[in-house]
Length: 399
View 1: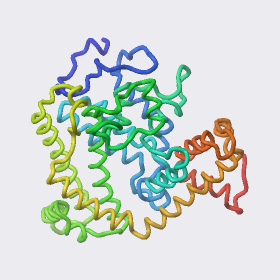
View 2: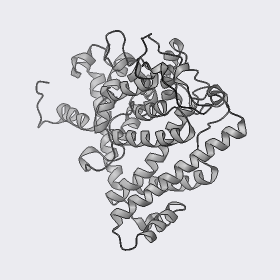
View 3: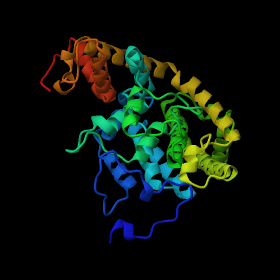
View 4: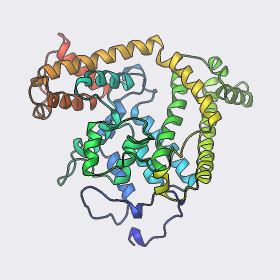
C-alpha cells in the first residue's frame, strides 16, 4: 500500500499539509513510505553536521562534565516538546520535529561565545549568523548525494529554518537577512518578508521552553545557584515549593526534576492555549493565513512571558555571567579568534579540502571558507586544532 492510499490524520485548518508541499529545489521521486517532511527529518538525522552537535556545547565546554546539555541533547529535547505541542494542536508533527532537530545546525563550537567571536572576526566580510550557516549547511556544505550539494530539503523546511523567529524583511522583520540567505532566496524564494509556518513557530517556542528549563537543571548541577535562590523567583519559586511540599523528606536531586517537569508542562499548556486564542481572535483558517498574519501565532501569554523574563535575567546574572562560565567563554573566544586569524593569514594551514576553497590571504573568499571550517568544529576539535597551531608541546602529525 502506498503512502497516498492510506487514510491521513485530521489536521488543524492552519497546519502545514505535506500533500501540498511546494517541493524541493531539485526534483526527486516521492517516497512510497514517508511523507516529504519525514524524509527531511531523516536527512537531518543522517547529516554529519547533526552528528557533530553531540560535541558542541550550550554553556559548558565538553570536559566540564558528561551530564551537561550539548547542542545534540538540547535539539532532542526541543524536538520532544515540539512534537507534543504539534500533536495537541493538530499540526504536522514531522515538520515541527524536523525544524526542532535542525534549528541549531549552524552553531559554532563553544556555544554563544564561539559565535560571538566568529561574528566579530567576520565583521569586515559580512558577519556570521548561525541561521544563515544552517541554511548553507543543508543547501551546500553537506555533500551526501551524487546529484546535488546539500540535503535538498523541502521548501517548508528551508523556510522554517531561516524564519522560525520571524520575517527577515518588511514591516514585521525581527532582523535582516544576510547575504547568503538573500542570494539563496533569489533561486528558491523563501518569502523572507512573511512569517513562517505554525510548525516553525512551534519549534522556535519549544526551543525557548527547552533551554529555560535545562539551564535551571544544568545551573543547579554545576552549583552556580541553589534551589533556595530559585524560590525567590515568580512562577518558578511556586512550582519548586509545590514539588518539595508534595515530596517531604525526598532528596532534592529527585524533587528538582519533578519541579522542572511541572514547569515544562505549564509552559507547554500556556503555548497551546495562546495559539488557540490567537488563531480564533484573528480568524486564522489556513497555513497561508499564518504566513500573512502581522505577528507570530505561537508564543507565551503576556503574564507568563513576564515571569519567564525574570527567569532569563536571573540565569543571565547567575549563570551566563558567573565567573567560571565567563572564564571559559573568554578562553573560547580567544581560541576561535586566534584560529581564524592564523587561517586567514595563511590558508596553507588548512586541510586540503578547505584550502582549495580559498583565494589569497585576507580576501573575502578565504575568510568565508575559514568561517565555514571553524563553524563546523566541535569544542574538542577546536581545542586540538588550536594546540596544533600554537602549542609547542604538540607537533603536527599526519591526519
